[in-house]
Length: 139
Image (cartoon, rainbow, N blue to C red; front, side, top):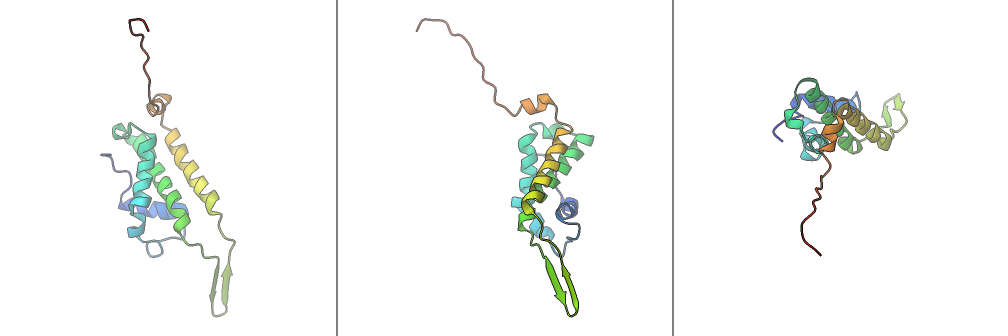
């Protein structure tokens, strides 16, 4: 894991992937940076791309985008959803968000980013290889 996919500049993208209204005040960097969110998003990419350390250019940017989407998918269920607001004569209400659908959409976007550059040979490296040989002798 020599390559870093998520840095401080990525936190804003993670917040906006969840909800465009989120900012550093409502969802602090210290929360986004937790290993269970940003770190896990990176690990999700590392698990799917065994050659991540060799990626450059567009492939690396797609891997970073995938890590952002994976981190957002992990963080989304923890973000409170305010469906009603009242202040004096002002009232605002909205339908609650479907968190499961949002998580599935974010994970799908991450997988699409990875699929855009992973070739069949790269994906084959994820599966163990068994070698069979014939040994001399009788049994």
